Amino acid sequence: MKETVQERVIEGHKTGGMVLLLVILAYVFSFFAFIFGMMGFPLISVVCVLWMLFGWVLLLGLKVLKPNEALVLTLFGKYVGTLKGDGFFWVNPFCTAFNPAAGTRLEQSGDAAGSKKAASPVESSAAVQVYGLSKKISLKVMTLSNNRQKVNDILGNPVEIAVAVMWKVTDTAKAVFEVDIYKEYLSLQCDSAVRNVVKIYPYDVTDNVDTTGDGNSDDGSLRGSTEVVAARIREEIQDKVRDAGLEIVDARITYLAYAPEIAAAMLQRQQAAAVVDARKLIVDGAVGMVELALERLNENHTVELDEERKAAMVSNLLVVLCGNHDAQPVVNSGSLY
Image (tube, rainbow, N blue to C red; front, side, top):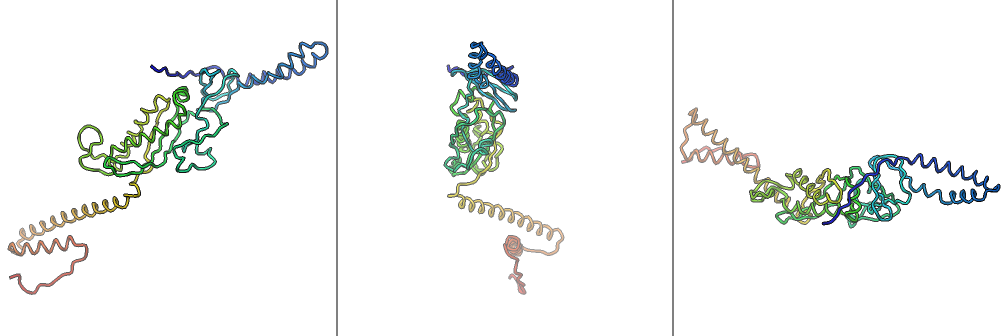
């Protein structure tokens, strides 16, 4: 079984200010001691020279952290521990900070602001490596905004969708040692999770489609169940990145539409469906009004109509009530017979 690295938080090392002060005082003392040694104490002068040449090495152990920042330290390749919390720290000067994702730039908060230029569509999910940056790990909640990607829904219709994922690092040791570059790993898992979830749903509500997996058809859809879809995307990503020491705080769909090649056809389909629904509502209302008119005439005995006259009146009323234009009255001066 694979052995995972456990995070160890280094405590009690907020002595950076004291060490800096002692090193400065030691340099001042060594300067005067060197002058004193030149008067007949060569050994003291040699010690002072050695200190002035190599004493600065102690300053390499000074580390400054702001709130919600961490620093993973290694000593000759071995994991020593993680500095957390704000303060001025001093650690073994031979310890080095390790963060393979320090130079990774993604389209996300904290990274996008540091880029000199916006990422091109080709580089939307790829990372641009920038070297010489701080090795500190941010523990803040970050927002990863993946670019639009084209995915086929359960009916095979191409859909364009984009998501924004709020995440943070919870285990610094797993983040830097269990995966190569945790930011790229998260971005790829977001793309995979979106595809896995979107292909379960239709874009609009469709009959005989099971989106919950219980064997019964339901009314789930990408457009009508955005909260449910986003929650499933978040759970899918969380399952994949838990071993990398990451926590998915939230996920939201930021863009959803049919792909351009079928958008016009789907718009015509939606318009046709809307026209049919509107016509159905008009007909239902017109039939109800005709029935009400016949009932009122029979109750008040206003006029006696045989079946043929009733049929003619019903026809005229339906034409008037269901027509798209105003009725043009025709005066009949004769008889039906």
